[in-house]
Image (tube, rainbow, N blue to C red; front, side, top):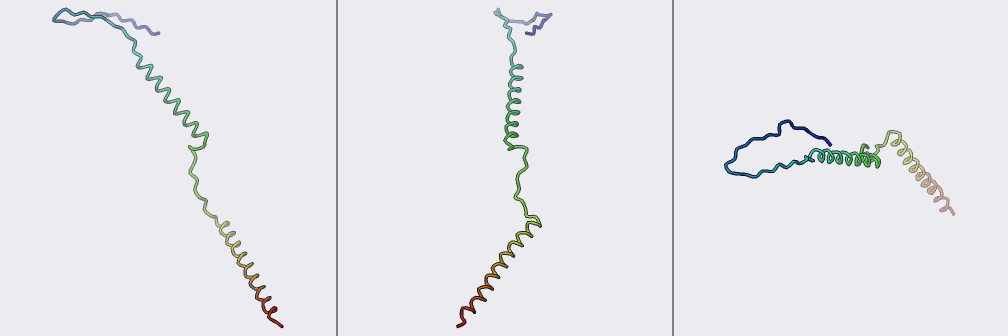
Length: 104
């Protein structure tokens, strides 16, 4: 506990009539309470940041839908053309089979 020593304990004032005075010494607890409150706020803020960091909700760039690269575009075009070629082969095979069925 800190003790402060005051050399001059006298205080002078004038009164118009008799007054009864009583000195009351109190400890000012406002500064320590303010410090404790500030520390609690700091600890809570650190815990929130750690929780967000741990769940990867903070400090993570937003995901963007991936754009097709030129290679992916070419591959999808090749697949489309393969399907179209298969359909043409099937149609050609049907046309060849149709005249053979019509022959007597």
